Image (cartoon, rainbow, N blue to C red):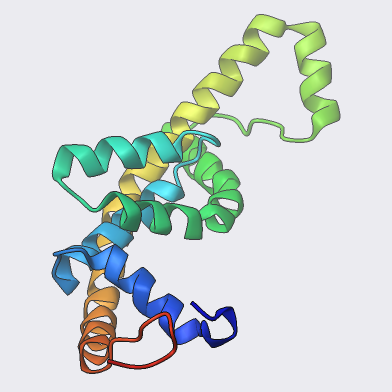
Length: 167
C-alpha cells in the first residue's frame, strides 16, 4: 500500500464501513444519538462503560456508540454545571458552591455535610440529565437519519479503497 495515495476519502469510507456494519441509517442514527447523549452524562469517567452496557443490552453497534460518546466529551464538560443547577431547581435545593476555595472551607468545617452535598448535587445533575437526554436523543436521531441516508447512499456509488482508486 502506498501511503501517499492514502486519502481522507478512503479513510472516511473505510470508517463508515466499520460503523455501519450491517445496519440501517436509522439504526446508526439512533446509536450515534444515544452515544452522544450518554456522552453528556454528568459524571466524568462513567460514559465509556455506560455506552458499552447500553450497546450490549440493546444490540447497538459498539463502535458507533463510542464515536458518539467521544464526540460528546466537550459537551459533557460544558453541560455538567447546567445539569447540576437544573437539578438544584428541580429538587429546590441550595446552590452547591463550585469555587475550590469555598468547597475547601466547607469541607474543613463540616466534611460529612460537604460530602453529602456533593453526592446529592451529583444525583440531582443525573436526574436533570435523565429528563433531557431522551428528548435530545430523539431530536438528534431525527437530525441524523437523513444525513446518514445521504452519506450511505453516496458511499455506495463510489466505494473508496486504500490505494486511492475508487471501485
